[in-house]
Image (cartoon, rainbow, N blue to C red; front, side, top):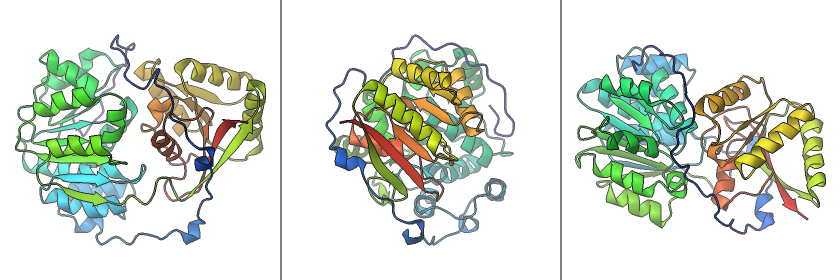
Length: 395
Protein backbone atom coordinates (compact mmCIF):
# COMPACT_ATOMS: atom_id res chain seq x y z
CA UNK A 1 0.00 0.00 0.00
CA UNK A 2 1.53 3.37 -0.96
CA UNK A 3 2.30 5.74 1.90
CA UNK A 4 0.81 8.70 0.07
CA UNK A 5 -2.73 7.36 -0.18
CA UNK A 6 -5.13 5.11 1.69
CA UNK A 7 -6.71 2.07 0.09
CA UNK A 8 -9.96 1.01 1.72
CA UNK A 9 -9.86 -2.39 3.36
CA UNK A 10 -12.83 -4.64 4.05
CA UNK A 11 -12.01 -6.63 7.18
CA UNK A 12 -13.54 -10.09 7.07
CA UNK A 13 -14.58 -12.61 9.68
CA UNK A 14 -12.14 -13.76 12.33
CA UNK A 15 -9.75 -16.46 11.15
CA UNK A 16 -9.91 -19.97 12.53
CA UNK A 17 -6.41 -19.65 13.96
CA UNK A 18 -6.47 -20.30 17.72
CA UNK A 19 -6.13 -17.22 19.89
CA UNK A 20 -2.97 -17.02 21.95
CA UNK A 21 -2.93 -15.61 25.44
CA UNK A 22 -3.19 -16.33 29.14
CA UNK A 23 -6.59 -17.97 29.00
CA UNK A 24 -6.89 -20.53 31.77
CA UNK A 25 -3.73 -19.39 33.54
CA UNK A 26 -4.10 -18.78 37.25
CA UNK A 27 -3.88 -15.13 38.23
CA UNK A 28 -0.94 -13.92 40.25
CA UNK A 29 -1.78 -12.69 43.74
CA UNK A 30 -1.40 -8.92 43.86
CA UNK A 31 -1.50 -7.16 47.21
CA UNK A 32 -4.44 -4.70 46.94
CA UNK A 33 -2.22 -2.04 48.47
CA UNK A 34 -0.32 -1.97 45.17
CA UNK A 35 -3.49 -0.62 43.54
CA UNK A 36 -3.40 2.47 45.76
CA UNK A 37 -1.07 5.31 44.91
CA UNK A 38 -1.48 9.06 44.99
CA UNK A 39 -0.66 10.91 41.80
CA UNK A 40 1.98 13.58 41.86
CA UNK A 41 0.58 17.05 41.23
CA UNK A 42 1.26 17.91 37.60
CA UNK A 43 3.14 20.98 38.76
CA UNK A 44 5.59 18.73 40.66
CA UNK A 45 6.33 16.46 37.72
CA UNK A 46 9.78 17.26 36.37
CA UNK A 47 9.52 18.38 32.76
CA UNK A 48 12.10 16.70 30.53
CA UNK A 49 14.30 19.15 28.67
CA UNK A 50 15.26 17.57 25.32
CA UNK A 51 18.75 17.93 23.96
CA UNK A 52 17.46 17.96 20.38
CA UNK A 53 14.56 19.34 18.39
CA UNK A 54 13.10 17.43 15.46
CA UNK A 55 14.75 20.02 13.21
CA UNK A 56 18.14 18.84 14.52
CA UNK A 57 17.70 15.24 13.41
CA UNK A 58 19.38 14.21 10.15
CA UNK A 59 16.15 13.19 8.44
CA UNK A 60 14.55 14.23 5.15
CA UNK A 61 12.66 17.53 5.13
CA UNK A 62 9.54 15.62 4.05
CA UNK A 63 9.56 13.76 7.39
CA UNK A 64 10.02 17.00 9.31
CA UNK A 65 7.14 18.66 7.46
CA UNK A 66 4.83 15.71 8.15
CA UNK A 67 5.73 15.84 11.83
CA UNK A 68 4.86 19.54 11.85
CA UNK A 69 1.47 18.77 10.27
CA UNK A 70 0.80 16.33 13.11
CA UNK A 71 1.65 19.06 15.61
CA UNK A 72 4.69 17.19 16.92
CA UNK A 73 7.34 19.73 17.87
CA UNK A 74 9.28 18.57 20.94
CA UNK A 75 10.82 15.09 21.21
CA UNK A 76 9.84 12.93 24.18
CA UNK A 77 12.74 11.47 26.23
CA UNK A 78 12.79 8.15 24.35
CA UNK A 79 12.62 9.98 21.00
CA UNK A 80 15.31 12.48 21.97
CA UNK A 81 17.76 9.78 23.01
CA UNK A 82 16.96 6.91 20.61
CA UNK A 83 16.53 8.70 17.27
CA UNK A 84 20.15 9.93 16.90
CA UNK A 85 21.48 6.45 17.74
CA UNK A 86 19.06 4.84 15.30
CA UNK A 87 20.14 7.23 12.55
CA UNK A 88 23.74 6.17 13.22
CA UNK A 89 22.74 2.58 12.46
CA UNK A 90 23.01 1.29 16.04
CA UNK A 91 20.99 -1.64 17.37
CA UNK A 92 18.75 -0.19 20.08
CA UNK A 93 17.08 -1.61 23.16
CA UNK A 94 14.49 0.92 24.31
CA UNK A 95 13.04 0.67 27.81
CA UNK A 96 10.23 3.13 28.45
CA UNK A 97 6.85 3.42 30.11
CA UNK A 98 3.80 2.88 27.94
CA UNK A 99 2.53 5.97 26.14
CA UNK A 100 5.93 7.67 25.81
CA UNK A 101 6.11 7.97 22.02
CA UNK A 102 8.14 4.87 21.20
CA UNK A 103 6.69 4.55 17.68
CA UNK A 104 8.25 7.79 16.48
CA UNK A 105 11.50 6.82 18.23
CA UNK A 106 11.96 3.95 15.78
CA UNK A 107 9.88 5.29 12.87
CA UNK A 108 12.22 8.16 12.01
CA UNK A 109 15.43 6.08 11.72
CA UNK A 110 13.57 3.30 9.88
CA UNK A 111 11.91 5.62 7.37
CA UNK A 112 15.09 7.58 6.74
CA UNK A 113 17.01 4.41 5.95
CA UNK A 114 14.25 3.20 3.62
CA UNK A 115 14.15 6.54 1.82
CA UNK A 116 17.96 6.54 1.42
CA UNK A 117 18.10 2.95 0.20
CA UNK A 118 15.09 1.84 -1.83
CA UNK A 119 16.36 -1.76 -1.80
CA UNK A 120 16.16 -1.94 2.00
CA UNK A 121 13.19 -3.46 3.80
CA UNK A 122 11.80 -3.34 7.35
CA UNK A 123 9.79 -5.90 9.33
CA UNK A 124 7.93 -4.51 12.35
CA UNK A 125 6.14 -6.76 14.86
CA UNK A 126 3.63 -5.83 17.56
CA UNK A 127 1.61 -8.01 19.97
CA UNK A 128 -1.90 -6.89 19.04
CA UNK A 129 -3.81 -5.95 15.90
CA UNK A 130 -4.71 -2.58 17.37
CA UNK A 131 -1.09 -1.69 18.08
CA UNK A 132 0.05 -2.91 14.66
CA UNK A 133 -2.67 -0.79 13.02
CA UNK A 134 -1.66 2.27 15.04
CA UNK A 135 1.98 1.81 14.08
CA UNK A 136 0.97 1.62 10.42
CA UNK A 137 -1.14 4.78 10.77
CA UNK A 138 1.83 6.58 12.36
CA UNK A 139 4.22 5.42 9.63
CA UNK A 140 1.81 6.46 6.89
CA UNK A 141 1.38 9.95 8.36
CA UNK A 142 5.11 10.52 8.84
CA UNK A 143 6.05 9.09 5.40
CA UNK A 144 3.23 10.69 3.43
CA UNK A 145 4.42 11.62 -0.04
CA UNK A 146 7.62 9.54 0.20
CA UNK A 147 6.55 6.89 -2.30
CA UNK A 148 7.20 4.09 0.20
CA UNK A 149 4.85 1.11 0.22
CA UNK A 150 3.70 -0.89 3.22
CA UNK A 151 1.68 -3.98 4.10
CA UNK A 152 -0.31 -4.59 7.27
CA UNK A 153 -0.44 -8.27 8.21
CA UNK A 154 -2.86 -8.95 11.08
CA UNK A 155 -5.30 -11.68 11.98
CA UNK A 156 -9.03 -11.11 11.79
CA UNK A 157 -8.66 -9.58 8.31
CA UNK A 158 -9.00 -11.31 4.96
CA UNK A 159 -5.89 -12.76 3.34
CA UNK A 160 -6.74 -11.41 -0.13
CA UNK A 161 -5.90 -7.72 0.43
CA UNK A 162 -2.76 -8.70 2.35
CA UNK A 163 -1.61 -10.94 -0.51
CA UNK A 164 -2.15 -8.09 -2.98
CA UNK A 165 -0.15 -5.71 -0.78
CA UNK A 166 2.69 -8.23 -0.51
CA UNK A 167 2.72 -8.76 -4.28
CA UNK A 168 3.59 -5.06 -4.66
CA UNK A 169 6.93 -5.75 -2.87
CA UNK A 170 6.39 -3.32 0.03
CA UNK A 171 9.40 -1.93 1.86
CA UNK A 172 7.55 -1.86 5.18
CA UNK A 173 5.92 -4.95 6.68
CA UNK A 174 3.95 -4.34 9.88
CA UNK A 175 2.03 -7.05 11.65
CA UNK A 176 1.45 -9.49 14.47
CA UNK A 177 3.77 -12.52 14.77
CA UNK A 178 1.05 -15.12 14.10
CA UNK A 179 -0.11 -13.63 10.81
CA UNK A 180 3.43 -12.83 9.67
CA UNK A 181 4.36 -16.47 10.26
CA UNK A 182 1.23 -17.57 8.36
CA UNK A 183 2.42 -15.66 5.29
CA UNK A 184 5.93 -17.05 5.61
CA UNK A 185 4.60 -20.61 5.75
CA UNK A 186 2.44 -20.15 2.64
CA UNK A 187 5.34 -18.57 0.75
CA UNK A 188 3.75 -15.13 0.32
CA UNK A 189 6.38 -13.43 2.49
CA UNK A 190 10.15 -13.87 2.42
CA UNK A 191 12.40 -11.91 4.76
CA UNK A 192 15.83 -12.75 3.35
CA UNK A 193 16.17 -9.15 2.18
CA UNK A 194 14.99 -7.43 5.38
CA UNK A 195 17.67 -5.07 6.67
CA UNK A 196 15.71 -3.63 9.60
CA UNK A 197 13.82 -5.43 12.37
CA UNK A 198 11.59 -3.77 14.98
CA UNK A 199 9.92 -5.59 17.86
CA UNK A 200 7.56 -3.33 19.81
CA UNK A 201 6.25 -4.33 23.24
CA UNK A 202 8.56 -7.36 23.38
CA UNK A 203 7.52 -8.27 26.92
CA UNK A 204 3.87 -8.36 25.95
CA UNK A 205 4.56 -10.59 22.95
CA UNK A 206 6.33 -13.02 25.26
CA UNK A 207 3.41 -12.88 27.73
CA UNK A 208 1.03 -13.72 24.89
CA UNK A 209 2.99 -16.82 23.90
CA UNK A 210 4.60 -15.52 20.71
CA UNK A 211 8.15 -16.56 21.66
CA UNK A 212 8.41 -19.43 19.15
CA UNK A 213 6.85 -17.38 16.34
CA UNK A 214 9.26 -14.52 17.02
CA UNK A 215 12.28 -16.82 17.00
CA UNK A 216 11.13 -18.42 13.75
CA UNK A 217 10.62 -15.04 12.09
CA UNK A 218 13.89 -13.54 13.32
CA UNK A 219 15.83 -16.62 12.22
CA UNK A 220 14.76 -15.90 8.62
CA UNK A 221 16.08 -12.32 8.66
CA UNK A 222 19.71 -11.74 7.55
CA UNK A 223 22.29 -11.51 10.35
CA UNK A 224 23.47 -8.20 8.90
CA UNK A 225 20.65 -5.90 9.92
CA UNK A 226 19.68 -3.09 12.25
CA UNK A 227 17.45 -4.08 15.16
CA UNK A 228 15.14 -2.10 17.44
CA UNK A 229 13.67 -3.82 20.50
CA UNK A 230 11.26 -1.81 22.66
CA UNK A 231 9.80 -3.02 25.94
CA UNK A 232 8.29 -1.59 29.11
CA UNK A 233 10.04 -4.23 31.24
CA UNK A 234 13.28 -6.18 30.95
CA UNK A 235 13.16 -9.56 32.65
CA UNK A 236 15.40 -12.55 32.00
CA UNK A 237 13.42 -13.99 29.10
CA UNK A 238 13.17 -10.64 27.31
CA UNK A 239 16.91 -10.05 27.81
CA UNK A 240 17.81 -13.52 26.47
CA UNK A 241 15.71 -13.04 23.33
CA UNK A 242 17.20 -9.63 22.65
CA UNK A 243 20.76 -10.79 23.25
CA UNK A 244 20.31 -13.61 20.75
CA UNK A 245 19.18 -11.33 17.94
CA UNK A 246 21.15 -8.10 18.40
CA UNK A 247 24.75 -7.07 17.85
CA UNK A 248 26.39 -4.78 20.40
CA UNK A 249 23.11 -2.94 21.17
CA UNK A 250 22.83 0.41 22.90
CA UNK A 251 20.28 0.52 25.72
CA UNK A 252 18.16 3.65 26.07
CA UNK A 253 16.18 3.59 29.30
CA UNK A 254 13.82 6.41 30.21
CA UNK A 255 11.52 4.35 32.42
CA UNK A 256 10.56 6.43 35.44
CA UNK A 257 8.76 3.82 37.55
CA UNK A 258 6.27 0.98 37.53
CA UNK A 259 3.22 3.15 37.03
CA UNK A 260 2.45 6.59 35.70
CA UNK A 261 3.14 9.40 38.17
CA UNK A 262 0.11 11.37 37.02
CA UNK A 263 -2.46 8.58 37.51
CA UNK A 264 -4.33 8.58 40.83
CA UNK A 265 -4.82 4.95 41.87
CA UNK A 266 -7.36 3.54 44.32
CA UNK A 267 -9.51 0.50 45.00
CA UNK A 268 -13.28 -0.04 45.08
CA UNK A 269 -14.33 -2.62 47.66
CA UNK A 270 -17.46 -4.66 46.86
CA UNK A 271 -19.30 -7.51 48.55
CA UNK A 272 -21.64 -9.08 45.98
CA UNK A 273 -21.94 -9.05 42.19
CA UNK A 274 -24.96 -6.79 42.45
CA UNK A 275 -23.04 -4.42 44.72
CA UNK A 276 -20.20 -4.48 42.19
CA UNK A 277 -22.28 -3.44 39.18
CA UNK A 278 -24.18 -0.85 41.23
CA UNK A 279 -20.92 0.73 42.38
CA UNK A 280 -19.66 0.82 38.80
CA UNK A 281 -22.93 2.49 37.75
CA UNK A 282 -22.46 5.09 40.49
CA UNK A 283 -18.85 5.81 39.47
CA UNK A 284 -19.77 6.23 35.82
CA UNK A 285 -22.60 8.64 36.59
CA UNK A 286 -21.05 10.77 39.32
CA UNK A 287 -17.94 11.91 37.42
CA UNK A 288 -18.45 14.72 34.96
CA UNK A 289 -16.45 14.52 31.74
CA UNK A 290 -15.46 10.89 32.30
CA UNK A 291 -14.10 8.83 29.42
CA UNK A 292 -13.46 5.34 30.75
CA UNK A 293 -11.70 2.19 29.63
CA UNK A 294 -13.14 -0.71 31.65
CA UNK A 295 -11.28 -4.03 31.83
CA UNK A 296 -12.84 -7.43 32.47
CA UNK A 297 -11.41 -10.95 32.29
CA UNK A 298 -13.00 -12.82 29.40
CA UNK A 299 -14.71 -12.21 26.08
CA UNK A 300 -17.99 -13.37 27.56
CA UNK A 301 -17.75 -11.18 30.66
CA UNK A 302 -16.77 -8.15 28.56
CA UNK A 303 -19.76 -8.67 26.28
CA UNK A 304 -22.08 -9.18 29.23
CA UNK A 305 -20.84 -6.06 31.04
CA UNK A 306 -21.08 -3.94 27.91
CA UNK A 307 -24.68 -5.05 27.33
CA UNK A 308 -25.54 -4.35 30.96
CA UNK A 309 -24.16 -0.82 30.71
CA UNK A 310 -26.08 -0.24 27.47
CA UNK A 311 -29.27 -1.38 29.17
CA UNK A 312 -28.61 1.17 31.92
CA UNK A 313 -28.38 3.98 29.37
CA UNK A 314 -24.62 4.38 29.06
CA UNK A 315 -22.88 4.98 25.72
CA UNK A 316 -20.70 1.86 25.70
CA UNK A 317 -19.17 -0.72 23.40
CA UNK A 318 -16.94 -3.78 23.75
CA UNK A 319 -13.61 -4.83 22.27
CA UNK A 320 -12.14 -8.32 22.61
CA UNK A 321 -10.52 -11.12 20.64
CA UNK A 322 -13.83 -12.74 19.73
CA UNK A 323 -14.82 -9.81 17.53
CA UNK A 324 -13.70 -9.39 13.94
CA UNK A 325 -11.04 -6.83 13.21
CA UNK A 326 -13.65 -4.60 11.59
CA UNK A 327 -15.84 -4.70 14.70
CA UNK A 328 -12.89 -3.94 16.95
CA UNK A 329 -11.76 -1.04 14.80
CA UNK A 330 -15.26 0.45 14.63
CA UNK A 331 -15.61 0.29 18.41
CA UNK A 332 -12.20 1.93 18.85
CA UNK A 333 -13.04 4.67 16.34
CA UNK A 334 -16.33 5.38 18.13
CA UNK A 335 -14.40 5.71 21.37
CA UNK A 336 -11.84 8.05 19.83
CA UNK A 337 -14.58 10.25 18.37
CA UNK A 338 -16.52 10.31 21.68
CA UNK A 339 -19.53 8.62 20.10
CA UNK A 340 -19.20 6.34 23.11
CA UNK A 341 -17.61 7.27 26.43
CA UNK A 342 -17.12 3.79 27.87
CA UNK A 343 -15.14 1.02 26.19
CA UNK A 344 -15.18 -2.39 27.88
CA UNK A 345 -12.17 -4.53 26.98
CA UNK A 346 -10.12 -7.60 27.66
CA UNK A 347 -6.36 -7.28 28.04
CA UNK A 348 -6.04 -7.60 24.26
CA UNK A 349 -6.54 -3.82 24.30
CA UNK A 350 -4.08 -2.97 27.07
CA UNK A 351 -1.26 -2.28 24.61
CA UNK A 352 -3.33 -1.53 21.57
CA UNK A 353 -5.27 1.58 22.50
CA UNK A 354 -3.72 4.99 22.05
CA UNK A 355 -6.44 7.47 22.99
CA UNK A 356 -4.99 10.55 24.62
CA UNK A 357 -8.12 11.77 26.43
CA UNK A 358 -9.02 8.69 28.51
CA UNK A 359 -9.68 10.01 32.00
CA UNK A 360 -10.28 6.72 33.86
CA UNK A 361 -9.13 3.14 33.68
CA UNK A 362 -11.41 0.85 35.67
CA UNK A 363 -10.27 -2.67 36.50
CA UNK A 364 -13.65 -4.32 36.92
CA UNK A 365 -11.67 -7.54 37.32
CA UNK A 366 -8.17 -7.66 38.76
CA UNK A 367 -5.43 -8.12 36.17
CA UNK A 368 -3.58 -11.37 35.54
CA UNK A 369 -0.25 -9.93 36.70
CA UNK A 370 1.05 -6.67 38.09
CA UNK A 371 2.72 -6.04 34.74
CA UNK A 372 -0.72 -6.24 33.12
CA UNK A 373 -1.96 -3.72 35.70
CA UNK A 374 0.82 -1.31 34.75
CA UNK A 375 -0.09 -1.55 31.08
CA UNK A 376 -3.80 -1.20 31.74
CA UNK A 377 -3.55 2.00 33.75
CA UNK A 378 -1.02 3.42 31.31
CA UNK A 379 -3.99 4.12 29.02
CA UNK A 380 -4.99 7.03 31.33
CA UNK A 381 -3.04 10.16 32.12
CA UNK A 382 -1.47 10.47 28.68
CA UNK A 383 -0.13 13.54 26.93
CA UNK A 384 0.57 15.30 30.22
CA UNK A 385 -2.98 14.92 31.51
CA UNK A 386 -4.01 13.66 34.93
CA UNK A 387 -5.78 10.32 35.07
CA UNK A 388 -7.42 7.97 37.54
CA UNK A 389 -7.31 4.19 37.94
CA UNK A 390 -9.84 2.26 40.03
CA UNK A 391 -9.55 -1.46 40.78
CA UNK A 392 -12.48 -3.50 42.10
CA UNK A 393 -11.45 -5.73 45.01
CA UNK A 394 -13.76 -8.15 46.81
CA UNK A 395 -14.16 -7.14 50.47
